[in-house]
Picture 1 (cartoon, one colour):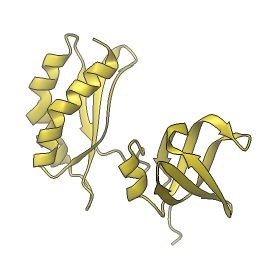
Picture 2: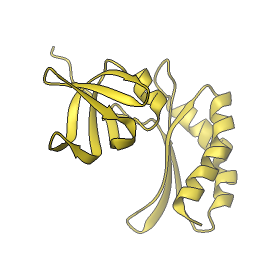
Picture 3: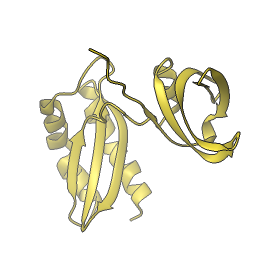
Picture 4: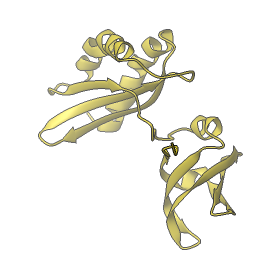
Length: 155
């Protein structure tokens, strides 16, 4: 079975359980890491941090059904996406307006594919990113990879 199909079917299984727990799925990956296959499910709550207990509860609720999807042995990991969480969906860009983000584009815009700046707005599938005081309009479909950028505060 193709990896994309496995991920789509896994999302179909995981979504109701996550939703019941008040959790959102950020991303699901099914990939080989070294000699082993992994299914990594990243979850979050809009209003706060994810606890280890929440990750374990969701993992226990889904492991048997997700295990039926894949004939090969794999490791299931359920965790927070971390401080520099990926931005995968349009609603992620809407939610994190005002945040610092890093974008890697499919094609060059103004002779560059990598940008880090403040996500000023997102509407009509267009990202407005402020990079060193300059506004760039980037079509959502040009984004290959995007994530938040965490900055430590000065003490």
